[in-house]
Image 1: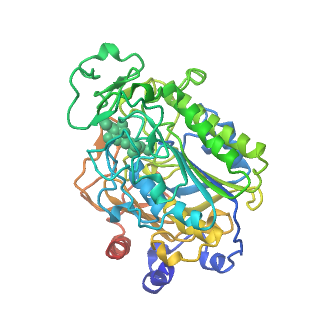
Image 2: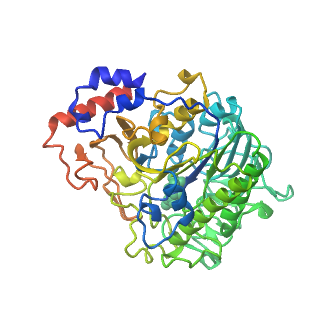
Image 3: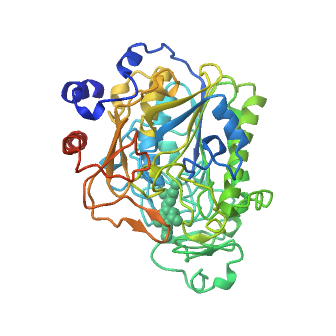
Length: 513
Ligand code: NG6
Ligand code: CA
């Protein structure tokens, strides 16, 4: 639908000139592929474009991920919907751009579920097509129906089940936010009813230590900015909690715990099609990898967490092979946003960075409008269907819902938001062009074609000294030629007023939808 509107009003526009190739022909050559592979989405946290050795990293080795990249398609122009976690995940599961909806910014630890259970979602589409669906690991979409007044001591609903997951084993919120507990099918795991959990994002509970007042209790990590409230297992967090002692996680065991729950899900469901969303905690802060990974790189905890991430990938592969379903499983590996080195804890990552470039050849990082905010690794591996390749196609995670719907034969595609396009041909390596354009959100909205990138003016600051991030905000129009200047150093808006006009027009057209 979208394509036709665009081609009517914008087809002659100079913003689409010099595109990699004509994707119309690729689109009409659409393969007839309706089939039901198992689908495993490995969703890394904060892994940047340059963080994997398959994407050029030299100081850290990610052999398990690299093997999938070498035997699958490695995308070089793939984007998350936003430059932070919650909005990217919202876009991923709903197929709707997060900037269309309020309340999709980084969710607090006591936020209610931000996805309306009446929506058609990626897991619901797959459920309807007969898949068993599971969500394991980082969630960060809120849970329950009462922001700020959650009772964590019973069945917390709505949550993963209400948006389409048959099974869930999730971190209640994020690694750096209380409550620091796992929830299995929306109940806190290992909770002792005599020691109930209390959570507040407003004030501390009497007598409970904090990172701010009791730094002597920080046995594992000290905050560099923020993260100085409740202390859980020697690390201070965002928010206050008390109780739930038997349920608290140990940060060094998170990767093991979620990986085992992911592989068990695979084992249990290997005889019928399943969809596994595996959101890793790595490499988000607080980074405190298991001792078998701590020190394996010379890059501090951030490098070690990348190796731990790669270990998890290897375990998933092993489980699929053991179950005999590796060949017919579609594995997608990508990340929720770009990289950040110091996101709030002293963990040796700044000192250990050396020549490593988490952002690859791009400018910015997590939180940024510049490319490194949303241009992320993206690997598609499916031995039965996909020939190894490197693809320059412009693709976005926003398309996952529509693309998987078409792949699996879901017919009510009109229920999926227009933002989500069927890009199956691009995702399977048949079409090397991909989308005509995508919109990403960070401090501002950016619109990216295969040649041009336009960033809307905003009043935000241009640099965050705490995270050392160039945010890409400016009160001026910014236009970059992403082909000749992929690092976005030369703003050519003044030289190309007509292109700026066209890009703005297209963005306005999208906003009005
Ligand atoms: C920020 C946190 C940061 C991280 C981020 C969300 C502070 C000072 N910073 O507010 O540490 O949690 O939110 O990251 O609190 S995300 O990858 O989950 O979006
Ligand atoms: Ca993230």
